[in-house]
Amino acid sequence: MIDLPPDMLAVAIARPGPPEVLAPVTRRRPSPGAGEVLIRVHAAGVNRPDVLQRMGHYPPPPDASDLPGLEVAGEVVACGPGVEWPLAGEKVCALVNGGGYATYALAPAPQCLPIPSGLSMVEAAALPETFLTVWANVFARCGLKPGEIFLVHGGASGIGTTAIQVCAALGARVFATAGSAEKCDACVRLGAEHAVNYRQADFVEEIRQKTGGAGVDVILDMVGGDYTARNLRLLRQKGRIAQIYFLRGSEVTIDLADIMTKQLVLTGGTLRPRTTAEKGALALALRGRVWPLIESGAVRPVIHAALPLAEAAAAHRLMEADAHIGKIVLRAV
Image 1: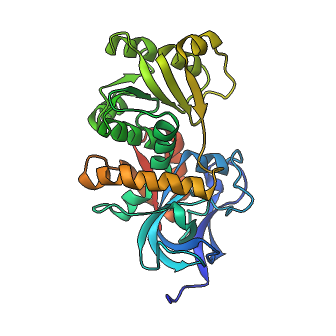
Image 2 (image 1 turned 180 degrees about the vertical axis):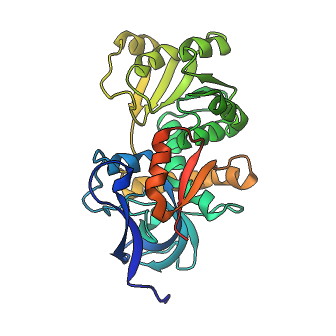
Image 3 (image 1 turned 45 degrees about the horizontal axis):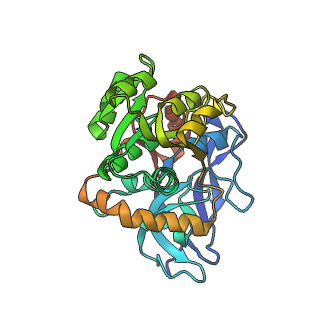
């Protein structure tokens, strides 16, 4: 049995508000319950839901930690009853239900994944939330197939850089939108056939032109608002949209005739409300289909910055500035 300290360092949300409400605190170290493992956190990913939780717009589930943080990488140091894998001593990355901004975090065992060979803890911490989100929405829900045409909005974000690489590696033609020439160039380097600077061009017309008028089969969208109707116009017959957020608003006006005549699907989802069994099934699929791509070097998490855990407020300011390409990560050790 590993000798564990009774307390841990964590970053808590003092009250809803700007990044400055994130403050280092000392908390009692949690202990794993049935089906859970305790991870000594080496690094934790920073995600848009963390920012929303800090602002008071994304409360954690009743049974989850009030600390922010939805993905970690580290070493398993204790296991609850019924856990067959991972065992103590295993190095893993994990999707957690909260509490990632700490030196110790609990994770349901099915939501743990082995760290792909060749990746650092910082890189591994950038995997679970982003890769599971892409897999759940683009492949499990929308069924993207090799040869189909895929578009991701926000191509330079953590989600975007992941989606571009995975979809290209699995045989899709990939397009992206981003907000600067630098970000568009990064999207192309990662495998996009073309990236549209949405500040300078109409993505619908430009992608129609680049696809010979065909449009696209699947769109991963985190923008919403006025993008929704434009997305529907860009989809080809039997196209699908996966909505994962709505930076421009959740209330939209659409023409149902587009959906009916082209047999379109407009769907969406988030990971956090899903059951452990559902997340575990997604993790197994990811391990089988995408982990080999990471280990071969065909896909790699893009890290924009890695900051100390105590500088979580600076990490959130960086995310809100929207100048980053790839993931922002907190180092706990």
